[in-house]
Image (cartoon, rainbow, N blue to C red):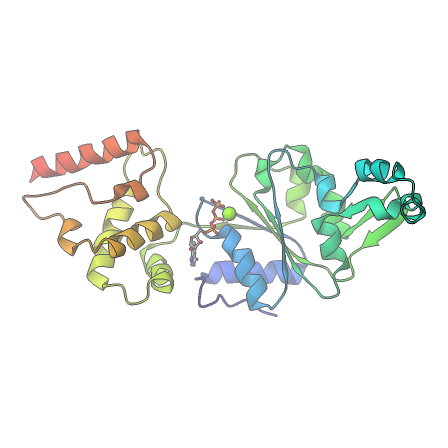
Length: 284
Ligand SMILES: Nc1ncnc2c1ncn2[C@@H]1O[C@H](COP(=O)(O)OP(=O)(O)OP(=O)(O)O)[C@@H](O)[C@H]1O
Ligand SMILES: [Mg+2]
């Protein structure tokens, strides 16, 4: 099983190497990178390229590690116990009927190998990764209520993404293979755009890319636009049929590019950009 990228996803050589290394080592692949650089999509694409079902676990600030294993639904059991008919009474007696399986449990007990995405692990509190050490390492956990050990029948291919909002503990890092998705250079970006908009006019794309990388290099910019924002912007440019001239800065008339709201997401950055354009105009 080797991941080679796909026709919807442009994977650089080092990203493919990292995916295959993680598969070989049988360790989770920890993927970091700016927002919108294709971390979540990577898991989806690898799963579909290797023809594995993908189980997804999207982490929020309130997510607890235990929820990924199982939860004991005491409330339903209590409610059922008050109903009083014979069939329900039977059900109530067996606590296993009230154990709700989490994503990890499903991944461990699936009939075939699966891919598992733990998305945005840095959103949870600091204990979360520590609480999953054994599960991720040994691929097993114990269910105290029913006294059974759940062990992975097939080791899932695990993807963990992080936006770096919190540091991850060392013990956790030791168990992962790490890859940082570098921001795509212009050539890779062309390939990515080509996947989404085949047949886009090359002049328009060149002009748009120039503006895009200029915006990213604005000194002091608060939020750099990323791949997905560029794609949004291009989509708008095409939909609104914006002419090439509107993007190319002709000597006399340098102006803020149209629909720049797709790229810049706060007023300081827009002001900064307007100033730059203004200065360029006066330097000519
Ligand atoms: N290498 C790539 N090939 C094709 N499309 C890409 C690539 N990278 C990013 N994209 C596009 O960017 C969009 C955003 O990607 P994705 O949601 O995976 O980003 P992310 O890194 O998970 O962002 P976040 O950190 O905000 O969750 C995708 O839907 C896809 O359209
Ligand atoms: Mg994501």
